[in-house]
Every structure is written in structure tokens, then in C-alpha cells.
Amino acid sequence: PKVLNWCAGPGILGFALYANARCEQLVLIDERLENIDTIHDTIKENHLESSVAVYQSKNLENVPSKEKFDLIIAN
Image 1 (cartoon, rainbow, N blue to C red):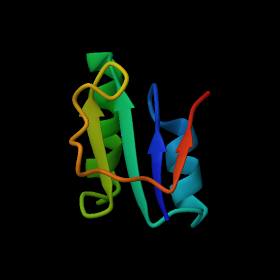
Image 2: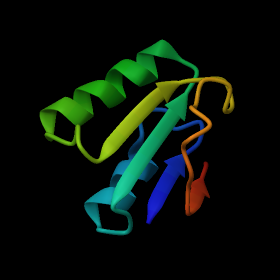
Image 3: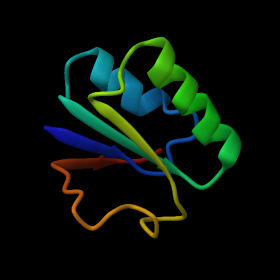
Image 4: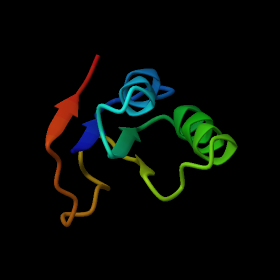
């Protein structure tokens, strides 16, 4: 399944689902640049570029319309 972590912050919930094999693809969105930078660092440090994406976005404004999700999570 493909999961969207809405208002992800640093991505703790989304990365936990991914690490525990609860999703095959993960997309994280947040509007704060410092959170996006942290997520990018986590993706790079763990070599997740092929299965994890991140968008800086307030709500879904900057998320491409082609993106489809099986589950949306938020905290």
C-alpha cells in the first residue's frame, strides 16, 4: 500500500509504518521547511529515495494530482 503522512512533522509516524513493513511507498507532507529538511536527511541517510517522497505543502496544495494513496495518517 501507499501511505500519505499528512502534516508529518519530522515524519516519525510515517517512517515507523515504513520500517515495520506496513507500507511499500510513503509520501510525507508538511508546510514547515525545517521538517522537510529533516525528512530529506532521513530519506538520504537510509537510502529510501526510491520508495519515500516528501513535499513541502500546506494541506495538499503542492502534492501532484497524480498521487493516489491507500491510507492517510495524521497526528
